[in-house]
Amino acid sequence: IPRLARRERERPAAAGVAAWLRPGEQLHALRPGHVPFLFYLQGRYRLALKAEELPGNELVLLTTPAQAEALARATGRSAQVLAEADGADQRLLLLRVGPAR
Image (cartoon, rainbow, N blue to C red):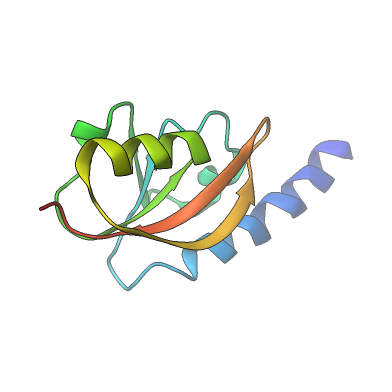
């Protein structure tokens, strides 16, 4: 039963993230750590280990605050915080990141 209860917490979290995505848009996750609710996005996400792996167009990004700051410093891309989320082991930010310059 604990597993079922955990599932019931993850589905609403995934739905909350999906609500920020435009039709046909994917969530990009930059080194987010263990994030169980990604499973419930059913393929509407892409994982990236490095900022260079992110596309240059506008995107929705899930990452840690430290990674978000490093991305802004390294690329100069603007970002708007849409929401905060909790991963299994750390705080995460959901951002709308502007296009690369």
